[in-house]
Image (cartoon, rainbow, N blue to C red; front, side, top):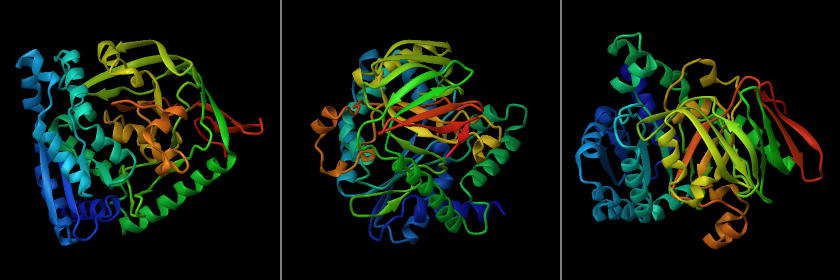
Length: 409
């Protein structure tokens, strides 16, 4: 039974998530603990006509050793060979799969400033690569599978084996692999999300007002000609793909200088192997002017101070509280899942594709239009069962977008 579901999951990733084309190269980034599944995906890719499959392995335990013991200056550097690895494949039109399965608290004993330096060096070196992916010029997909450390964090009262089995069952459910025909199930899911996108785009909203009992009281202005997206996306050549599996969100970009008020987190944020918990951000004219955190304050501080753009928002995403992942009542400590259980925002870079005719615009045009630019893009969760969102339309009317945590449309 498990082998059958694994086969279905790998096929779903290759055929629907990545929509891998004949003679296209696939680049997989995976933790070494996920090697058996990464190999299974590679096999499916070759069966679907991949020209080649290349795997870039990640070793979190070694990374921790390096962060603890390497000399300080090493974290300001990024290997030229790694930069050329990603740039060469992205320019060839390769598809990119990332398997996200980190230990949520592995790096809690590491100086966050060291990790921030390494993150900045990596993001700077790979900026052109990231821009191509965020502009959908290459197909890409982020998925996950259980690892022992992550599973035990989610289910601490179970044995290691039981926790892994339970997390596998949840992942199969959230990505619809447990259905008779996952590809058909995803077609239906995409259609539902497209319907919600259509409604939001037809409203021509100029702003969103958020309020809940946690203390969120935030107004977000939306730029003219913004687009709501969700479900699947398309390359300029019209190749459809799904960037996140699972996905339950519809999202757009904010006006960079149009965010005012306070927002309070509703779930912990796993960032660079550290948890940031019970935090709040205060915005004035788009910029963070104050922030607090009960746990992970220094990690939050280094994230916000990555660059100027990391002081601003880059994404606005809507997810109903009454949705499959939320209804599981499981805190995953993994943003891929937790962001699809909750309305969320993102610090940092905006997705250019959330603007009409974005393919005709140059980078400087986005800045003039008030679209945020940054080396980072980090989602954090704000949705609650009592979240209210009121939208203002271009003709000045108010419309209820969310009521009691769910869509009111």
